[in-house]
Length: 112
Image (cartoon, one colour):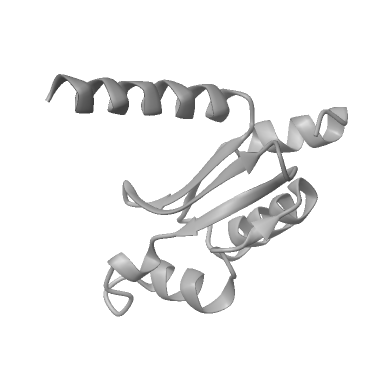
C-alpha cells in the first residue's frame, strides 16, 4: 500500500510541475475531468486523452459536443492545441480549461 501511495504522490508532483509550466492541460465540466493533454518532450507534441466516453452524453450537452466535434485522443503541436482550446472556449464557455493561459504564454515567448 505504501508503494502505491508513493507512486501516486510522485505522479501528482510531476503533474503539478507540468501543469505549472504549461505542459499539462485539463478540460472539465462541473468538476469532472473530460480530457487532458500532456507535453511529450521527446516528440515535441501534446498527447491528448479523451475521457468523454465515461460520461452520459445525453445528460450533459458539453460532453456530447466535445466528443462529436473535436479530436481529443490525438497528438498536437503546441499551436494546434492552443487553436483547438480557443475554439472550445468560444463554443462551450461552460467548460473549464486549466493551463491554456500558460500554454499561450509559452508559445508567445517561443519556449516550445
